[in-house]
Length: 263
Image 1: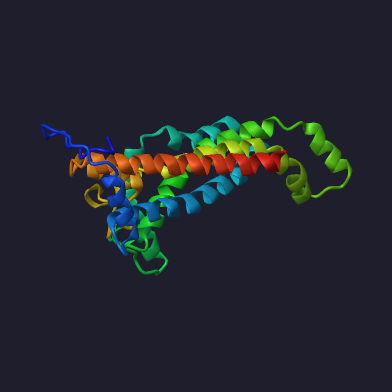
Image 2: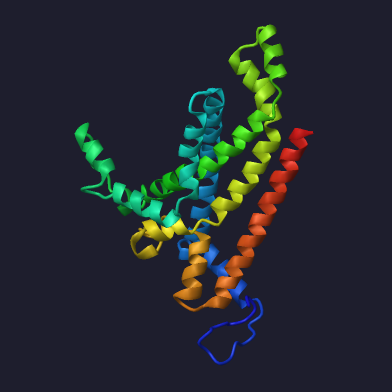
């Protein structure tokens, strides 16, 4: 489909060769374009979201692993957002970020801080959307980390305690190395998840356009708008192929690098 000027409303779908890919390259070479903004934002979501989410999930899982009383309740609390509708959560966050009456701005006003535009600001919109994605997906990472922690034999920690190792050294030389396979698994899954971000941006931004000024748009949202708003499915398909290739390359690199570290 990416090699055709495909329009579902047209009678014919002419073959155009690499014209859609040439258009994509031209868009990326421009100083500013919606497609270039989509790729830049997607990379920003990835580089910011994955480390923050995994670090927070690891810290929470380490704390939950030490809790014995009502531990199941705490795990359910953290996992519940992951199985809740993304659109529903996005609308809740959208209300929280409302400029005048949103809960976040009300709390800022209570401590004498200026109200913030959040989703109305090109500088603050991306972090605002990112906060939802990190929070919602963190529960899954917490549960996986907890499963990994349960696989570490207690005898290792007992031996470290006998040797007088501090909590930091125990974490650095026992917990972290033995969690490497779990970290690799989550790193790959969360990378793919952030690269295909769509629903949070669609629900949280004005008319689902990824604004303001394309500051939150992603590649998948760009594919959606090109395919189902402009009916330019050939160009949308070329975006999909490039995104798939990018995900494949990133995943292979991650697996090779982290596999070396594990060995």
